Length: 255
Image 1 (tube, helix red, strand yellow):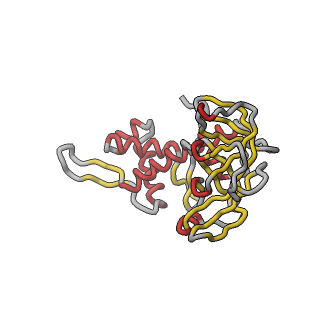
Image 2 (cartoon, rainbow, N blue to C red):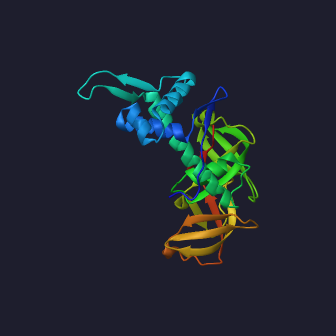
Image 3 (tube, rainbow, N blue to C red):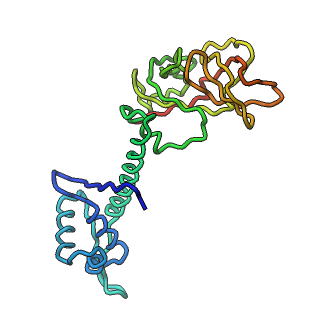
């Protein structure tokens, strides 16, 4: 049983379109194929059921009910495709509201960012490294769009390489909120500085377990998860260099 009850109401043209009672009525019609029986199951009078249905149909962009004439059961009433999609949408909105309320309990999640809040309660990814930031700049290099992303507490922007088509589809502009993701194997660890110009960071190994290392960037609270091999001889507390190939970073955003 849900600990939180959130009652969702949708209005069209300033009039009530759908609420929990009307959703229950439509679901009962879908189940039994009879308005009369649906009213009984929903514990409302037949007249009240008709009043609700007429009010909904009056403002609905598309019909909600279909009359089935004849047949071995003597006909009945069924939902249109639009009505069934409406019920699916209502269920999705209820789930979203429930997740959003749970986000409220976690004070580490900023509620001034739609992207970060949405990702926290709806996005699951195998990428161990996930960060939120804002587009700092974009430029073209070898037919690729190089996106510089400012991430809080990161000394310099993280560079992401995406296709031109992806850049257009994502509608990237300066200061747009984005999410960057990359898997642990894509974080390369080196004992000495590399010649890479972008995405090169100094860090310290904090912990190692099951061929994964948690490394903290120098002068930052940001931690990366990187894949390691026991034969490489890394040690906790060791200072290292990290590099992430711009082409191995996934960039996501909301429309």
